Amino acid sequence: MKVLGTIAREGVDMKKFCDISGWQVYMDWDRLSEEFDGVIIKIGQGHRLDDMFISHVNNAVKYNMPYGVYYYSTASNEQEAIEEAEQVDAWLKEYLRGENPEYGIWYDVEDKKIPTWNVTNITTAFINNLWEKGYNYVGVYSSYSWFTNYFDHDVIKDVAIWCAQYYVQNDLKLEHPDWHIKLWQYSDCYSDEFPYDANIYYEEGE
Image 1 (cartoon, rainbow, N blue to C red):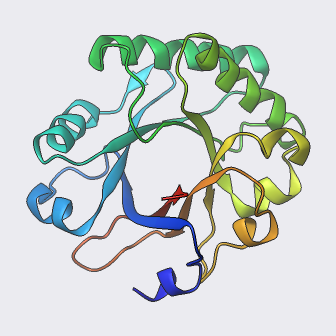
Image 2 (image 1 turned 180 degrees about the horizontal axis):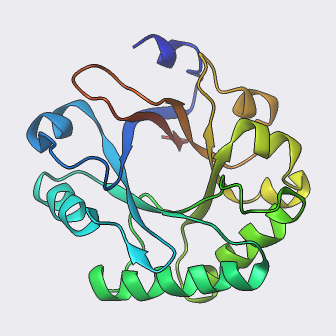
Image 3 (image 1 turned 90 degrees about the vertical axis):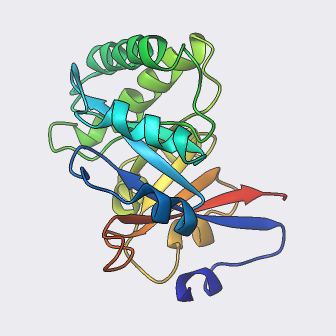
């Protein structure tokens, strides 16, 4: 896989992940589990549980695929972000026995309703709320452009990061090797057989 060769470095094990949501209904999970090392599943948006969340989680477990979850944010301020965190907590307790998925809880920050001038405070309000509830692996998803231009670098560098940049290399990781970058979404189509968002997951020190 060409993209792997552009970012490989000593001490980093890279795994292939896809991310899926209610848009992906008919999936060959047997083939999916052979091709990918793990999957990030949309849990919901607003107060609406994703239509395929339960099915996707059940299949991930059935086919022994490690998984994480992501929540799509539309918060316009810190209080709304806290309310979103409370909703995620409620779903995790109802459907996952309150457990933190192995590959994280990710806060998807890209919607136009989110004021870019306040994106760091909104993100940390969500993450801190879940940290205080005992979830120890919570991170943020956004684009290379947003991470570069809108987030407070002194704050975000210590948070688990999932960066979207459709390119042959992960510039954010190259530019900020000290940041806690765990995932890179490098394409919105892995292949014709697997037309899903394609990601690299970094396992540091393995």
